[in-house]
Length: 80
Image 1 (cartoon, rainbow, N blue to C red):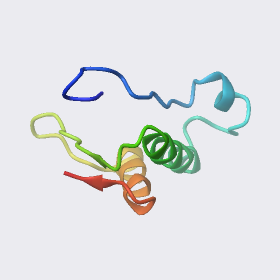
Image 2: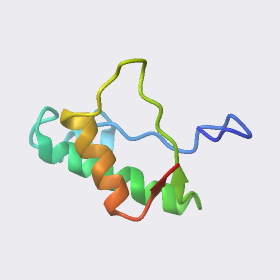
Image 3: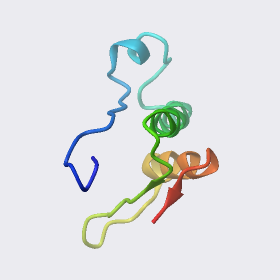
Image 4: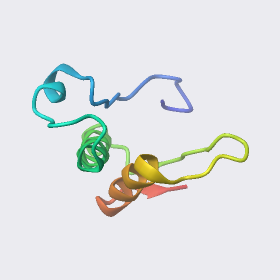
């Protein structure tokens, strides 16, 4: 979501029609990598090269979320 305009720039989920049938398992770590790459690509298409992620209070970044955020960063998106 864009902070200035409150406009949703994009949404990526394993339940999306384009991905649901092509992914072997929505619970697999490889699927998290696909989602991370998709978010990075859509960010670049929307001319967004820096994003912010604010975890919940006492929230940890691990598991699939950690994989997604790592892949986004590896694909050239900066976290601020």
